[in-house]
Image (cartoon, rainbow, N blue to C red; front, side):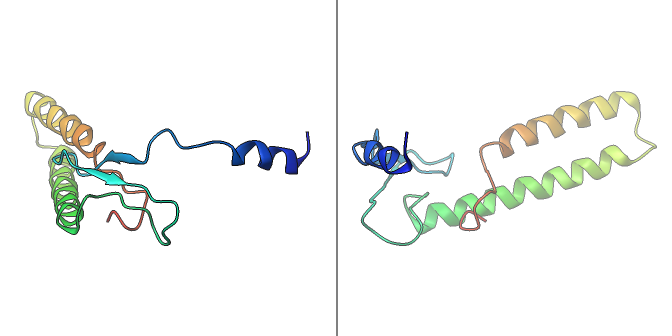
Length: 106
């Protein structure tokens, strides 16, 4: 199969959808993908949501850093350390909803 044939096959494909939910986990709005516009494609429904996303992500990262620091304290009891690990796990779980792989997100 030649590369030209592959491109011809792909040119007939259409996207499944042009709408997707805003990347802000606290938002229920959607964004529209328009392949005819230049620049980065929208990840957020508005600038307000993009800013809120970044603010919440930074807050969670700060809290996680504080929790990590508490856990590193050798004077913490085993019972307290278990509580801290639970909190650490919860914060990491929340952060899964705030990816950082694109510069426009941060």
